[in-house]
Amino acid sequence: MILVLLIIALAGLYGIAVIYAANRFSDSDIPPLEIQQKRESFSIIIPFRNETENLPKLLQSLEQIQYDYDNYEIIFCNDHSTDSSCDIIQHWLAIFQGNAYLIHSESPGKKAALSAGINTAKHKWTLTTDADCTISSQWLHAFNFDLIKNDWLCLTGLVSYQNNRTFIQYYQSYENAALVALSGLAITQGKTLSANGANFCFHRQTFLDMGGYSEHQHIASGDDEFTLHAFAQQHPHKIGFMQHKEGMVHTNPQASLAAFISQRVRWASKSRWVRNSNVIWMQLTTVLFLLTLISTAIIGSTNQGIGILACIPLLLKCAADVYFLNKIAPTFSYTFSLGYAVAISLAQCLLIPLIALLSLRGNYTWKGRTSHFAKP
Image (cartoon, rainbow, N blue to C red; front, top):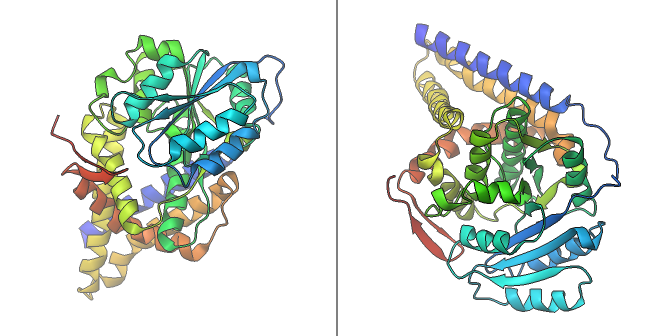
């Protein structure tokens, strides 16, 4: 009984922390976007591998960018595609009026493709996105506004999932919004958790001076997160979070449960190389907390003496998560659903520990490649 009461207290603290975070994020004082006369210059780096289905939407959105052509360039970095992706880009380059190029990475992997693009880039700021994303016409103006107003060297932005049709797609949309919100809130408080390479900006020369991706080149994933942590280690007060909706990037969730798990295992597998104690502590406590909640609920269902009490921690988690997801919904432009929010909060108790367990093996298949991470 005492143990159950302690778990209830723990869940209560979780709820307080989540509600506090939701209020802090949604109450952020975001000045309205203003078009600045001064223009920073950007090199947009887009690595891709076999993106035939997604490229047309990305290219269409790139055509809508409202920014001086002389102040940005687009570099498509081919990571050994075997489909018609390069042909699609070549055709688009022939009609695009701005500065855009297609290069081919010599070595396999996203980081090699990114490195090739960054080494080719001519502008002060590197801005990365993915080939399965779309951007707004004011994307560069949003980053330009924050960079002009602040003394950043690294700047992360909003990423939102769209075209949700199934439960697992809604799950990704809601969970991604929560992760981006928590990561952004941590940055505003001087800490770093994670970043998303789909909307990630950094000072090119500082990145190169820090060694680029050299320390983690052997790790297939984590170009964004490791770069964020490197900036945090060497320039802790030069990291910002760009919360303007005009600078938000949209992408599609994975279509199936298998594809989703494979993606998340890929993301989680890099955790063994993370040196940021905040991230390690948060990941470990999250998994243990969820396992505790689900175990308590299962034990309670077989023990009439503590049955109702054992369900309270799970109910507290659900209530806090529902509040959080509803509070941040306007920022990420998704339609809030109470039913989905409750179901997603419950599903996390199983999915997150499962993905953590699978990531220990380090095996996953992505973009037609099978990877295995040896222990560091």
